[in-house]
Length: 253
Image (cartoon, rainbow, N blue to C red; front, side, top):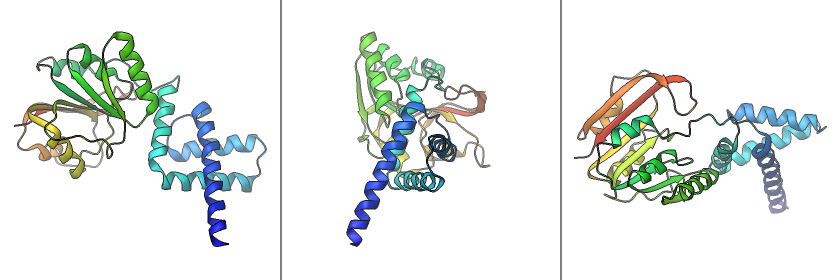
């Protein structure tokens, strides 16, 4: 009996998730989870779903997200990349264009590559480009555009934890609005280990956050040559609004 009840609960949660993901993929507005679930609740109420049932379905979705966070992230970013009001530029990063122009093309890795704006620019500039993203929709768009402009990308659907970075593999690693935690020592060690000696790590994204010592983020790269570093308010490629940003280019010894 206990097993039967457990299976029923699992099936109920799966059904609630499928219904939610179908709604969000077509009609949802990306945002904070609480805001998305509130909008979904209102949608269910507008369909005449009883209040108790609404609460039960939302609870099932919340439980599913806790148990399957990767699926939640994929759904979120897939929606962003199909949303008409997508909050990002499709042009390659001006910082990447400026800094990488000084480097001889080699093997490049684009972390959380999105729809390929930077990967395709690098490939057109002569780099052999690999990249990964948690959004299969983003990769579909990237590969379609790459085919359209006549360049080749090696892409993989993966999270930061899943992608095999390798050791001494890359002449250039790009982390542009990659939504990684630069203070995640284990992940950043994998990134550093995967960079070839003399290779360049380019990081661009949101700064700010809790108060910290100036240049604290550079402490993880004490042996690296700092080619460029700045923290300032500027227009972000992701969000296209003024925000505290950080840009740095580092060369591995």
